[in-house]
Amino acid sequence: MSLLQLCFTSFLLLLPLPSYSLNDEGLTLLSFKQSLQQKPSTTQLQNWNPSDTNPCSWEGIGCNPLGRVISLTLPYKQLAGSFHLDSTNLTQLRHVNLRSNNLTGTLPPELLQSPALKTLVLSENSISGPIPSEIGNADRLQTLDLSQNSFNGPLPPSILNCKRLKQLVLSSNLFSGSLPDGIGPSLITLQSLNLSSNAFTGRIPGDIGNLSNLQGALDLSHNFFTGAIPSSLGGLPETVYIDLSHNNLSGPIPQSRTLLDAGPTAFLGNPLLCGPPTKALCLSLPEKPKPMADDPLLEPGSGERRLSPALLAIAIVSGTVLAIGVVALSFAYWRRAQHGKRNDVVVAAGGGRSGAAGKEMLCFSRRDDVESLASENVEQYAFLKVEAEPGFDLEQLLKASAFLLGNGGAGIMYKVVIENRASLAVRRLEDGGGGQRFREFQGEVEAIGKIRHPNIVRLLACCWCVSEKLLIYEYVPNGNLATAIHGGGTE
Image (cartoon, rainbow, N blue to C red; front, side):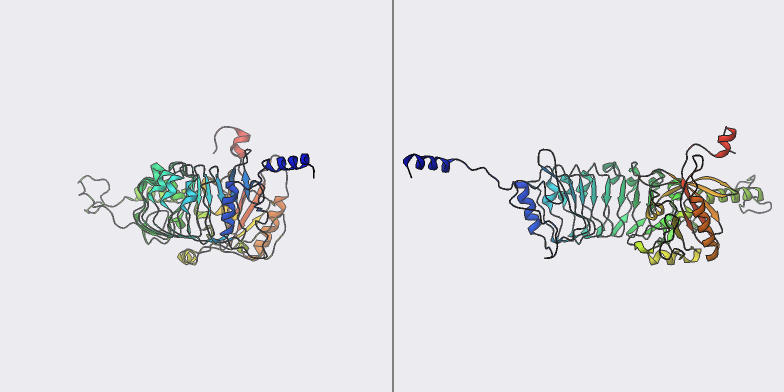
């Protein structure tokens, strides 16, 4: 080799080589992968390649235009092992969704240090331990779903620092203790709060009624709450799905439209509660003052205060109107199955029948709910879809709020408000009939469902049982037929 060639080769060796090493975000994610236990046959996370310069092309990883990791989305991937994710290097991480895996261990406090974290969904895993107090550092958090795990301990007061929370779902865990004071004013942006199936104790905070932005659920069922129902709950929006069942609540139920619309099932399993919409009478009355001599309510010749026949008739009529006003009665028996099996639902879509479409079903998943209503003759229901994709499912219908629109010869009409969907119109017809009538009813519904006309409201679905039928239509907010023809107000 000539001296010139030797000098040139030496010069090339001195040149810096381009770096193709994985950045810090990728190394952090690889550390997370190494903490998992994957089956040899699994194909998950195979493209998490340490030879890449960044993890933006990896499965489940989302990046912004600058190549920074902003999301980790790996639901239903059969990932197992101790959950460990240090977000120290993931400063732009906004969304974490690891729903329905087999993760164990505890919630790492380091994950909550990400200043940009907005969504944390870890539901349907086996994570345990308390919620770290560092949850208060995630002040941009909007969705926190830790449901169906084994979390325990009290709810840390620091969670009240998450003032942007919209969805807080902690159901089906082992949480205990009382709720921290200040939930109402601190978490004013909450749209859905589900604390069901835990071991919370103490009174329901009165300031929960300040959650004026609730749109979905306020579910405190299956806990150990005691005391009276705060009257402030009556000020919540009427569209909120309220469930206070299976606690140790006592006293009269505040008489507000919101709580009456919740229906009797919202208060099941609280034997010391009384008053509408339940059938339990409130027998503890305040001490009556001594009647005056000219008291018009006194029965002649008696010192006892009794209603006159005329006033008694007015009271009976008012009670009847109130009973009609509890518009969620038809829907109150349909409890959203917390862990219900989907194959229990009877569905006939597109005019056909699927499986045992003629089989009746009971829209409950909890045995104690069924037993509690056994004496009230709760019927079995069949749910049929007329439209192949009506835009809602049975679960949404079960937790919907309903409002009375009218009562006529064709049955009672309700407006039903389903979360994240336009409203529905539901007509309730009496006398569903037996098995033969079900088949006749199904045939008639299929025929009606095929009708298409610009002036006819579409039939979307229906429900049937032995004693009643429900027809579910699109809701048209422009009045009834009489108003369209004759104008003016409704009769």
